Length: 227
Ligand code: DX5
Ligand code: ZN
Image (cartoon, rainbow, N blue to C red; front, side, top):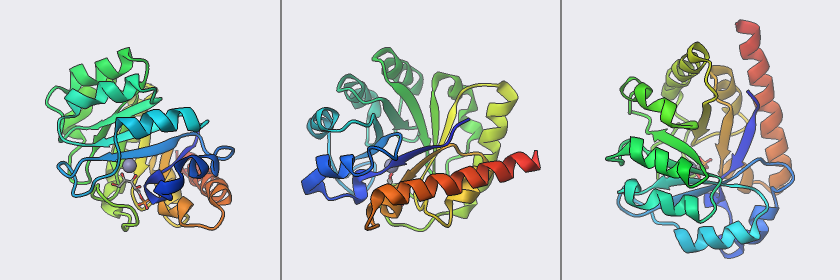
């Protein structure tokens, strides 16, 4: 399990997305793209046309997080637009098995997201259809919110599930991940870290990504000592 960092452009300057994407191109692994529709969450961001343009302008693979109603209808379009990963919310999908398969068939990694209050137990049967589990560590919709420690036991349970089955499922955390909280997420078992304000809110986003990675690696080594 390798640490990966996915800076969220939600906290970037939307008038200069290509420049903002390049600001983390040498330090990050993915570019996290938050798609919001004013229905599933009370905020509105961007859709397919911007993803298509970013795909051409950015060198990092796109990690599209769909916070939208009816992801079954729209998710395949994001995979076809060239996203490297497309994540749908379990709370919004009515045919998650089919939708996750369609994302994979279109050549992207398939992600399943759970809100902080959504239990993991209801969805363990679905996890073999997914390449990544996204555990929200804030209520989705806005950047800059406070990390919810109450999600840590769910991260631990997800890591135990993955280890027990020996699968390759990545565990992503999103929301309030910063220099102070990333270590405990890694220690609990997360391996893919989304950070918006902790990257784009800093004067040097590239240095912020490197610092976050170092802290996550530290947390991971602590978790290995405990095993
Ligand atoms: C929130 C989004 C996040 C957001 C995180 O609903 O899914 O990706 O950008 O922002 P920070 O890292 O500032 O909490
Ligand atoms: Zn997100």
